[in-house]
Length: 135
Image (cartoon, rainbow, N blue to C red):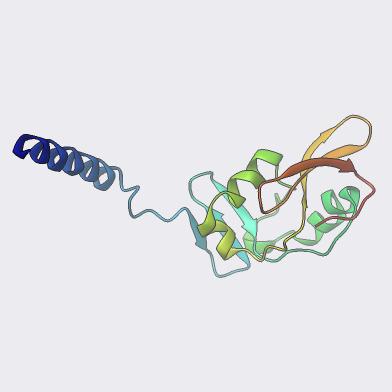
């Protein structure tokens, strides 16, 4: 029993020292920049905190993006890819810093036949016509 306890304590100490050395135990994944944006430090992405209203994919991908020019001092805003939306929604810390509506959001990931991928904050995905209104 003593040997098992010693092995367990040693294993826990090794795991904790690895976390402290890598700094993952204390690192924040997302940071509120205080200027209407949030930075995901793990993925190197910046997100607009506010959610625009429902709109077609076409409107979301061009005019709405154009209206964000200069937000946070950046001019390269775009709709996120499907996997990027899934990543930010998969992080409770990031999702908590954003104004997220419990509805589907357009991604920049599209397929032929005028369809594009949607991602819901729950992580569910689906294809919809680009002429439908989503966030």
